Length: 342
Ligand SMILES: Cc1cc2nc3c(=O)[nH]c(=O)nc-3n(C[C@H](O)[C@H](O)[C@H](O)COP(=O)(O)OP(=O)(O)OC[C@H]3O[C@@H](n4cnc5c(N)ncnc54)[C@H](O)[C@@H]3O)c2cc1C
Image (cartoon, rainbow, N blue to C red; front, side, top):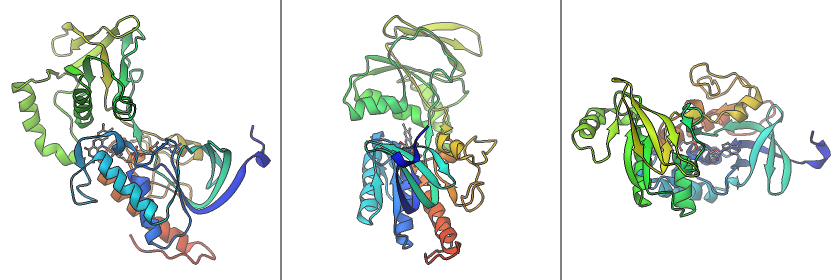
């Protein structure tokens, strides 16, 4: 139990949880609407969200109208947010709520309470882990998700292994493939229970080409309709058992690294702690057409709403949510804020 007196309390116009594309774009938009005190709380030590660690091209098409690498895209959002005066607080994790629109924050300075007139939840999504994929076997080291792989390689320059199996064959799996290759790791197989490669909606016209390409030119063998049944090895991963679901046959693939990719789910803990109504399909926060949750003044945008979409989609959603927040604040009793229509 936290003693209320031990917490520092401050008040802002809008508090945003998460400094990814959705949160940062919302913050920039809110400042452009004339909203003064916009605070973004980010649990990690750097702002920009997932794109910071995706060193391939493919970001910014619909919001920046150019194609950028993830880090360039993330940097441009961060520098625009800073230049318009967004208060960006790093290493600040929202751990709960005191009451509606009052956030409990844990940071290097200790615990604090942030009261806000409106809150935007932009906490993104996370990948399914080995546990959620129900893969049995030993607890050997060398089992990663794409997110942990990219942080180890790009943030810490860590040598992750020599031979890797990627579980999944969607866009994020190919991002893992590029990361492993750039780190000098040979990818010996991609394994997916799906009957074809999965892509984000915007790239679906390429699906047929990629599926044909993967069958004809298996630079990396892609095992469709197949599952990793177990992981073997003591201390370090030594191999995986893979079952072909069409034939029931099993094979062993030697590897020292297994990367679980995809199976996205909303990072919804902050929304759950708030007590907002959840969407039964996505299992993220439910919203109305103005991005407001079931709690008045608490909004949500970005991948927390669904699992996975592209960064520009999340960014545009952040802007639209910010416009709605502007309207909400303008309509609040005694408000002098400027709002604008979506
Ligand atoms: C490997 C990979 C490759 C990708 N490739 C592409 C691509 O080529 N092109 C493209 O457009 N998109 C790509 N994407 C998707 C893109 O990264 C996401 O759509 C985008 O990052 C979503 O933005 P977001 O703001 O919703 O969430 P995120 O970027 O996930 O940001 C959420 C932020 O919230 C923070 N947070 C969470 N909980 C808390 C808390 N309690 N307190 C404080 N902070 C918190 C997190 O630390 C994080 O920084 C890729 C994603 C991955 C994983």
